[in-house]
Image (cartoon, rainbow, N blue to C red):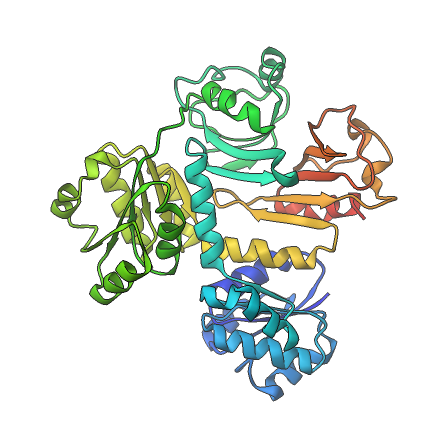
Length: 446
């Protein structure tokens, strides 16, 4: 595909890096010369310095032959104008990043469709929804639903109390064959791999598991983890992400929002109907104690400052908070954050890239997730008639070493994959893959 990315920072950069190995012709339009110099060192990218709302700049980017334009600047007005101009100038498909929830309303969406926008995406909206989902599955570090909720892929950390410690993969699957699950990948000391049958499970391993919904509780018990009862939630940061989380949770939990900016605090008070808004600094230990930090079950730090989010989560842990979630915008900090004991990490760049890259993978990809803890993807395919994956049972297919076909749904029923499983047309199939195996996996579903 001929893809044009209009960006002004890290989201555009991360998106380009995610796409660069996918046999696409990628052009980046960005107003920052230094960033373009850094990106331009990659031979597979074309960079253009300029304003994406300029017709001449878009024409230099060969807009008339663009299969896909993704406008992901911080300013949603520039993104929308870029998208409208791009479509008028001949681009086949246009997706724009937006920030305000008003633009995602049905009536606004119809207006932008009429103007040529094919899709709109808000990283803040998706991030907020992921936090809401995490609270629903609070013993897991990452959790995703596939096949319409019939399959769940999640990650747990093996605690010292886990029954699985010291067992091989083969022993684990034989001893617990009554549980409908499969371990599809592991991360151990910064190394992610698809475990072989003789791999031994160790304390601290981050284990990715696919299962049916009813098996989740038992698997968590095997890992040494227990789901905690969540009642009291403290949210640090009343920006776009924080306010959306509070709005969606306030009718279910006792919510306290800490916001350091006075004007934002007043605005939040008017926006929220049940949550308590506190104007104050979450790094102030005296304030945390006054607000009952020792009674908080879940602590969610989503300010615009990564260091503040990490620090306040660690502070809350010392008071016995059961679950911590931090918004970590610097991808270099993700692994460090988890090693320090923060339970779950949210990253808007990965969220945005997951949504956008799906549009480059063809119509048969119904869902794509970039995992925040490791460099890996989970892809859900809708199987087409004649696809290579339908020609033989799973055990006879040439599946790349760094990929696993995890599970599938057929005629409304879900299954965990075994060697004898036979994929058929119209099935929905979940695949875990490391980056170097993506192209080979794609061939199986063509």
